[in-house]
Amino acid sequence: MDPSIDLVRQGYPWAARLRAGRPAVPTRFLGRRAAVVGGPEGVRRFYDPRLRRRGAFPPPVKLVLFGAGAVHGLDDAEHHHRKALFVRALGPDAVRRLGEHAEAEWAVRTRGWTAGSGTRPDVVLLDEAVQVLARSVLDWAGVPCPPGELRHRAGQLATVVDGFAKPGAAWVRAAAARAQLDRWATGVVRAVRAGRVHPPAGSVLDLAARATDLGGRPLPARVAGVELLNVLRPTVAVAWFVAATGRALAEHPAWRERIAGGDVAALEAFCQEVRRVHPFVPVLAARARHAQDVAGVLVPRGGFVVLDVHGTTHDPAHWPDPDRFDPGRFLAPAPDGATRDPDALVPQGGGDVATGHRCPGEGVTLTVLAVAVRALARVPFTLPPQDLGCDDSEVPTRPRSGVVLRPGRG
Image 1 (cartoon, rainbow, N blue to C red):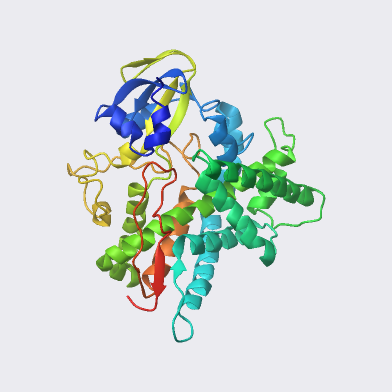
Image 2 (cartoon, rainbow, N blue to C red):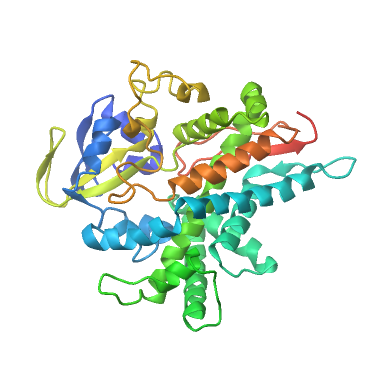
């Protein structure tokens, strides 16, 4: 029996259970011989150039989450060339502007929670965050989206995020939403190229519409649309982190008070701890270009190397009492007094952003998450009775209630 079937059943704990504290273990993955690796050394081995990304993702996941022809399945010069699009689009100044858009949107939204008098309706934080982030990123990216359409597109993006790795009806809904988004994004790119839409110079839409392949030819409109969505969708996916934040702020009032008071170090530590405790995916996968030894495990050509993301961010050797939410760990020295190994924290992958496969949107995540945390910390709210538990077998997981906030006190 192929143990990878248990990944669907177990979700986040799957790889750590297989490794049982070992740096690497042999297994089978999607019918092929494989090694599951974890910890900082496993992270560095996973990003070794002897491995490739082409063919590493199961098609049902890849096509729904990333889209056909996306940068995530490219290697070598083709990957570096395509990734440069994202590096340009997501530079520090651009990310700062996105943060400003998100800050303005949260200000409007939270004022609505507390305006007026009398009984105020409860707020489902996950749903609110999806709308805020979609509105922020679409406007910032230069994508025309009338108010009546925005809620619809935000819902489609969230449906893709919620169902891409869930077999059954959730995946079917995600696949349908993905097909609709692909048609929409392709149409937007074609409108730019035909001169009917004029995005701001240097915006994500502008760069995607003008993107070329290695030979200097314009990307097919469908592929350019896919890459546009690969900026929009991950930004909306930060809503899952925001939902976890609402619960954590309510459960840790001392941190909430520090953040509301303007403690920047506390804010940054809080955001990192949210990402550490709740990495978006349990594992990442790559394939061997040729037969090779992977931390003592022989992997044949075409075999898989699977990185245990969740187990790495919950490794007690680097994160004592790893299941406890404690932002203070980011304000203190590493357990052995040395500098903390950056490859122990890989909720969005490891390696180098410019030359490797590390997510170039990590700065976006940290920026828009920090904006949301700061906004929520300053708004009075309590949590009414609800189911805040997470099902670790579901990817991506989230509090079952979506985190219901009761504005007005707290």
